[in-house]
Length: 135
Length: 135
Length: 135
Length: 135
Image (cartoon, rainbow over all chains, first blue to last red; front, side):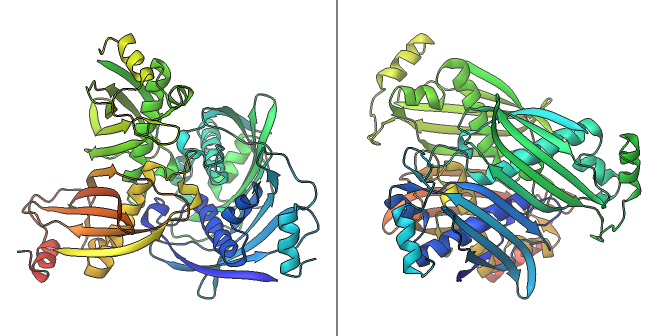
């Protein structure tokens, strides 16, 4: 299992009139976690584009357990979930200390630069999986 | 089944370098749909607060089928899903014309103003359900 | 003087823990006003791109007079300011009823698709100005 | 002159269809710089609220010199500008390396918790200025 952990800080403008982070901003936190994972393991947006691919999100889910507030330092774990489909699948856990704040999930597909969907793994992803022993 | 349909237009600043709406902005579209529903049927954020309640989101999901672009006029259907749990449950469909762009789902719980969770329906929600024949 | 007036409604997620619109969101309101102006008078982002031009923002100012709150209906006036420089210059006034909420100003320059700056008006803008008697 | 320098990284979702940061996001960068300054020097949003004050923004300006792109690491300098008025005045410079990307300016006033404006410095700000030899 491939995992990346990064830290982030809650901005004032991410909080709502209840004083807690507005739920939509978690999608940004997931993307930040995914990009940090991608940069460590060579599968960031830029790596994917350098392979002449796009990887649009086809599903995004967040489950909210406990609120985040302005100034909180939180940790996000981004976990690659191996999958036989031609999909990039991540799950996420956001913590403050030991407290689970939220969990999330994203699924991406691969397309070429014209937007044509790959039904099986594009070579770039096949190589990436081989490199990390997912094949 | 209680449904509200509203229209929205894609802003330039909601689109990303691929020229399509960044996936996180759909959470705003769902909230706009939910608020429009809430204003028609008396269950908006303000109605809920006037009853001394909050209704924080505990789950949010979006499934992306087809992209949105700057200037697109889209339609969002917000559908109340009746439920025996003390939860406010909506599903959403976003269309351009006949084309399904995305589906979504949100779940909210009820708390009092101190954040204490209601395990059964608060009186406000019970009355609301009765009014619309969901009980 | 060329002016466009449009209405907008304050979204829940545009408000901050003080219950008022976070100041950064006004930049979106200005852009919405400018785009509505552009669509009426043929100088929207799309019109500009169809002329093989970009018009990046080089200056943006907002002066805040009175707050906006969730659910407020506000009016934005977008005013084209004629200018001998090769610049697209707008001022803005945001009102609720008679109350002035904010004023703003943006300046855009013109570049070709490679980002090369126009030091004098590109033909598209020259024609546009002629059409509206600004030359 | 009191100055704080911090670094930030451009997120994918801050970039627009031209591949550059949408101009409105700079307001967030200024706020991040101001908050980092505030935390170093005891004049953050939280410090201000702990003194039973708010400090709403009454003016915000950005001048854009050169674009930012996804993944760029930029530096923001936040500079306190001393002022005899009862105002919190900052200027900002954003750089990549030696290249000036943008400059900015914000002005804040002080109000009590009911929103009543201070026409002269509230004691908290008077003490703060004394501490840093601005009086």
